[in-house]
Image (cartoon, rainbow, N blue to C red; front, side):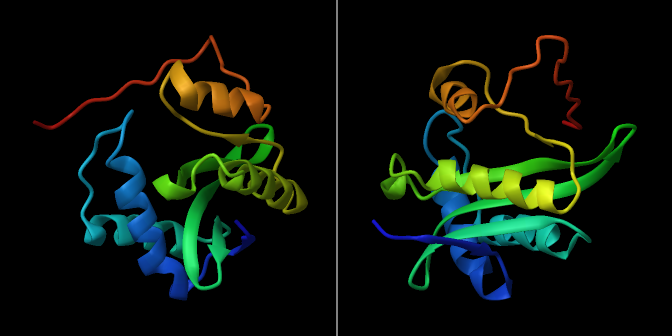
Length: 148
C-alpha cells in the first residue's frame, strides 16, 4: 500500500470523517459517530490556530488522520494529539506509525517540546503507542464528569 502524509485541508474533511466513524465503530471503542459529528470534530481542529492536522492519503482517499491541538504549558508549547485514526482495512500497514512520526516531527519543527495523548490503558493501543516511544505516565489520571 502506498500512501503519503500531508497537511489535512478542507478537501480532506469528508474522508477524514469517514475514517473517524469507521475506526471508532470497532473495539476497543465501539462508538457510534455520525458523519456530521466526525466532520465537526475534524473541522474544529483544522480551524484552531496553530493546530497540526495531518492526513495519510492514497491518491485522493484518506486512509488515516492525526489531529493535534497546540497548547501552552509552563515548559513551552506542546501538542495534544486529539485524534489518531486509521481506516480499519488499512491498519497494520505503517500508517499510524507514519502519522505519529510526522506529527512529532512537525510539532518539533514548530517549536513544541512534546506531543501527548489520552488513550485506553493496556491492550493493543497502549502497546502501539509504547512501540512509537510514547511513555505511559503513572502519576496522572483522567477525570470525567457527565451531565446525564
